[in-house]
Image (tube, rainbow, N blue to C red; front, side, top):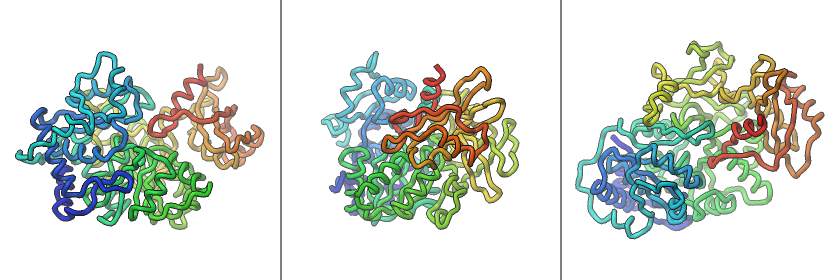
Length: 500
């Protein structure tokens, strides 16, 4: 069984239900979406071979949904590329993936001309006459059914170096889909999935789950996240679910605090993709209500390692709210030392997991695959601790750990404390080289309303909550923290800058 089967079954059961919307306007019914996907599959099979990679480089748009299911129906793999990347970042992904075709939006097509050496893939502009010509024939072939074939070539966000292509099979994404429906949300034809976050990333990975249940796929007319537009769509579409990076939760919370109405039909906010700090989730719950669920996962285990379900938030203590939750359905999680031996409950080690959701490996990168996949387990590179009841609390990426005077400091622990200061809006803690200590702890802060806290007050706050050796030896203030196109803070960029 492949992912197209989800659309096939829903279209037969709910043919007239609205499937794809642009803003408030319906673009496709489920019967129409199935027909378009099958016609696209026929057009692709006339030009390319099963197993070929087909890239998509676009901002969010309604066509994204039919492209995904059409590529899957053709027995090919999709290689989504973040529409916020520039042409020079697109080039190595196209080269590494060996994509035979590239679907590009009209807005982004001119940028491809800047790629040195040009693009070897067939470039097809979404919405053009060449695009529509692919939909001419009826599908007459046998539907692919092997769940082990490559479905999604997921290129990592590249915060720690050159992006790698995680190979996600139909089975991997089906495991994601089933775990999401079991743990996190319960969509049906009377619900909606909004896509203000990139469909090339987290938001797009949830499309199969909501298609399986006949929910609406709603793409904002802007193609991205504008709090006002999102609030308006929540007032039109029923029972809205959405995937947000933590920075997007923060922006929505600020908009409502500034006087915007609370989203009328907001049902579920799934947040993940970066650290959600304790103070932020507590404030967001107070402002937006009990709508949150949390997921922790990597591109290599898409969206699915641990999570907090809706019921986990009720009267939850800080240790739960500050965690990343419990192992997801069908996922086994452990915390181990460098030799792979489980560490005692509550002690910090590397988080590893195994499941049908774990990738097959990295595309044409045997060395990276061997480093990450060992004896059936994926080594995440994240440091964390498991409680006796199975609650996982992350500390940091292993590469972000600071060693000062021979003692380990986990930046997130320090950041959580600094964010309790009323004038601190964002915090990023990194290690900076030092002749005496090896590294010193440095905090880079964004403040609220331009009011800069005194270093002495920040020191006192840290001394009251954490060991003295963890306290930053220096504070720096910025208007904003550097972030990648998915909203993750670029710690490496800050660390490199401060170490020059």
